[in-house]
Length: 320
Image 1 (tube, rainbow, N blue to C red):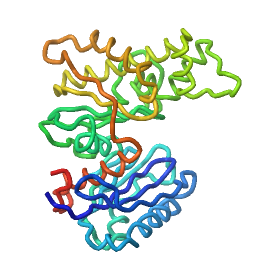
Image 2: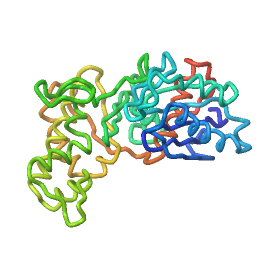
Image 3: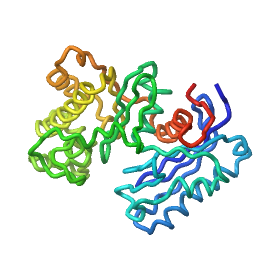
């Protein structure tokens, strides 16, 4: 196993984070800036360059072998471009080219943020030791990634495993992606809260209408809050079962803010999965919470650069 550090970027609508990650998954250096998501594309890129400048100021930078980027999507790894839904100034933005130029020509690997988190969970988290896994992020949106036959499987554009946009309700609500009844439209945090409010749930004196507040109400026995989480769990179960039927995953790992609801989400999810994963070869799928926490994007982007570096000449092998 190589021990030279790999640089990484975790780019989302709220923050842009950068790091150097060693061969054991430890973050040696980190930097972060808010994402100027409402500004033009060059302003956003300057924030990326500021993060890279801070990380590269470390004396450890000289030994960095590659850089991995996990970005909110859609991404197009084959073209090296990104078009994050929540960063309006970036549409087909040539991020790989610009990061390569900013880092003195380091090999760059780009994947979607769900794929990056999957790489982290397979290397250091709940999917470790599993050759076939789905890892999901259930938060403001619902994303994911796949490990197949022991290897990260990002697909040609870096978006494979994006379970949030599997349709599980053919006549369901219109999703911002243009389809109907997507997992994300039912199971994301904002949609859990929306459905609870529409069903008659009311927040407490603090006025908190987040999914976390709905989860607290569900734990306290509120039937509308419980029903909203059960509906989210049902959608997740249907998407997980569909994925398992196609590629025979053995574990589904769930992270993100909504996963912090704990058994309010996981208990109905396990029950619903029994209804959807009924064929013999998909029964017994393990459901587990993610373990890599807030650094998953940075660690996973580094792991993806190691695992997929052949796309861009990367020679490092962080994940062994």
